Image 1 (tube, one colour):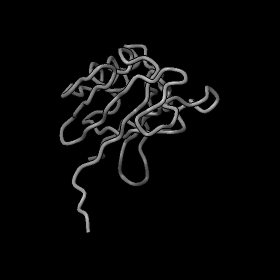
Image 2 (tube, helix red, strand yellow):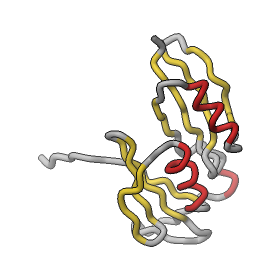
Image 3 (tube, rainbow, N blue to C red):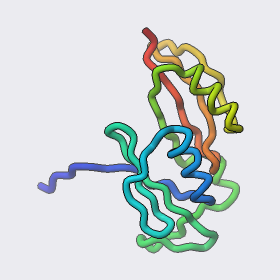
Length: 131
């Protein structure tokens, strides 16, 4: 049986620099690799990649990399990022002009949670364990 060891999502984005401005500059991901319009990022023990997708562009898998505009409203992907202070994080995102989708609120499972949107409309959950 084959053993798998690592996995990470690849986000197709409309504007690579806008995505890097959000994930790298605001969330603190570190760029670990870049080839053309593909950038690998890490945060702690987590990793994601962002790849610019142009209209009609076909990926290595032979499928279109972009979604029709009516399906791009952030429904295809959601990222969860933990922080020490959800409220301060949301204040920082708001000051940077990032859309806040859901204001910080305590959840019944013991976390404080809020949502922002990345430049492509993907919902990004910002959460912390309540003490």
